[in-house]
Image (cartoon, rainbow, N blue to C red; front, side, top):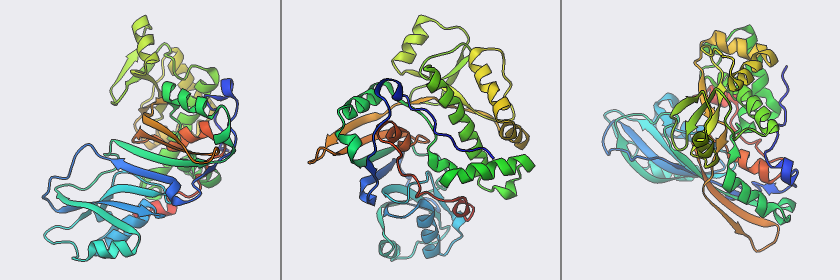
Length: 360
């Protein structure tokens, strides 16, 4: 079975490996605020609720909402999965056609550690991935924070961006999700064995990280290669670079466009360009995963190799070994990718399991 590697960091070559620090010592040390770029319309059969929860996963909150409204868990929608050991704000929706929610719904949720901040009706269910960004506020404590290079690490990330790795929580404790994905793809993927597609996503995420790790090790994860497909900053608009010129190189340096990596799918057909040959080599390195994904029929997609921190702020604590960092990331990007460049071994063991995911 494929073992989960430790992918290279971008700052190690110049600043060395980071030192240890405490992270998420309490839920209040990790705050996330999900940001939509629209508001519910105020009418419709779905009740949308913006909630704040502590020490509770998204799926746990969704199941509690379904129970209190006496509906199937499938009638509850959410945009993103938020960490369990954290204080998080996000939207949930519940389908209530022709009827109101219980009068004491907010009070009942409050007894379960869920505060309703806003609520409004909307015609449609809240779908996965419709939020625009997540705002993170993270408290770090320990040796790494009091090192002379901590400020330099932070400023480099703010200035140059971060390798857009999928976080280790995607792969489960000790890579167990990846091992399950490999076993399923080896015998042939079936939807009934992976209803939410999380194992497909896990395999694709691993292959993307493998490619990104190679580009980080080569030192060209921010540079454009011949045949590169690039993504515009702030959008998912893509175009291919067949011939490099000064303008494109400057746009990449200014973080206006980003190199992308492949999310493997059945329709990938590599040419002989430098960028696509790197991606095609994944098939030789991980044939079980790439063949299984091709046979599953999933379509290929693209993900930026680099992610930029929006409105980053560093605040020093009263002690030399304490700091609070805050920043926004686009949906799909992981705060742990930022943390791994600042501190060693961030704790990401408190995420939802595949068993949880298949219950909704």
